[in-house]
Length: 219
Image 1: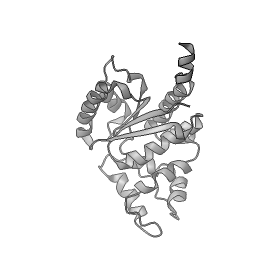
Image 2: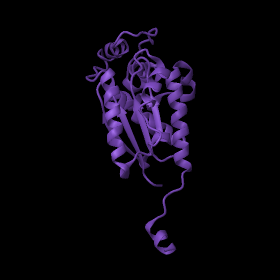
Image 3: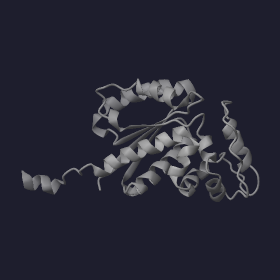
Image 4: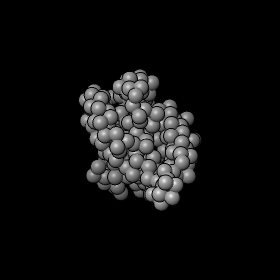
């Protein structure tokens, strides 16, 4: 199968580890071989700066027409604005002429990505070795609230995480139970899974480009 170039616009390493693993898992479930995925990660900074940097990122992407993404994953924390408002804010920066406009998937963890790390307590325990996972706090808009819960839980024996849980991202995603059952726990996660499945199914069905030999034979 031809290589599938997945470009990510992300805010931080916590998003990178989780979302790369999630894309690979959904790709496998949709029949796309993981070895066909080529991950190209672009990092931004937090909050309002990330929005401005996304605009500049799009300008650069439009200039590089020879290496357009097959899939563009754009991740910005919701920060209690919710999926709809954040997605609308980002979508307005796209232009009708963007050749990648129909390949964009928005990942908007609300309020922050650490909520997704905590969402499946069984997966968190199995991935980290915790005897007891922290309970999911009530929805909070306080900055770093979920990050602190995760950091506190993983700073104690037997784990002693040095990165606040980021190093366990792939294992957490791999051990999550059926992704469809988790969609009820978080609306923004549900939207991401649905959009990823749709995008990856389209890539799986897309015809492969002709090989050099077949092109020569038809000449």
